Image (tube, rainbow, N blue to C red):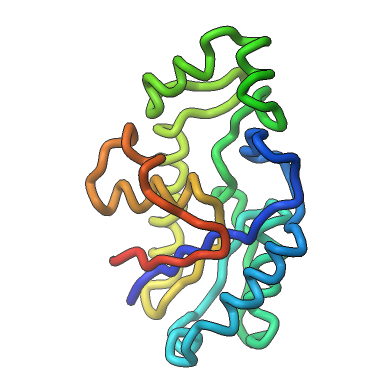
Length: 187
C-alpha cells in the first residue's frame, strides 16, 4: 500500500458546546461547502492513486464521502463501522455543564486519564485505538497496493496519528484535526 489518506467529515448541524461522539448528526450547509471545496482542491494525481474509499457508517461521514466522490463515481465507496467516532455513551448530546450536573467530577476525571477513562456506557481512547488499528490492519491486508482514503472522525484520526508518531494518548487532543481536512498516514 502506498499510503492512507485520512479525511475528517465537514462541520455538523448541531447545538454548540455539546459532546457528539457517535450521535448521528448531519452535515451543516457549511460542512457540505467545506467538503465540496476539499474535493475540488485535490490534485488529479491523488485521485489516480486512490483504489477505494472507506467511510464511517455515521451519516456525516457517508455524506462527506459522497460529496468528496461526486466527480469520481468510478471509485468504490465502502462503509466501515469500525471507523466510527469514539463512543461517549450517556454523555453524547450533553454539554460539559450537563455532564457535571449528572456525573460530578466526571469530565475532570476524563481529563486526568484520557487514555483509560470510560464515560457511562461509552469507550476509552485506549479502546478506540485498538479498534482503529485493527481496522487499519484489515484494510491493509485487503488492499496491499494503491492508496486508501478513510473518511472518518477526529478521534479516529488522532489515535492513528498518535500511534504513527508514537505519542501518548494523553496528548491526542493536542493534534489539530479541522473539519474537512486531510492528512496522510505514512505506511
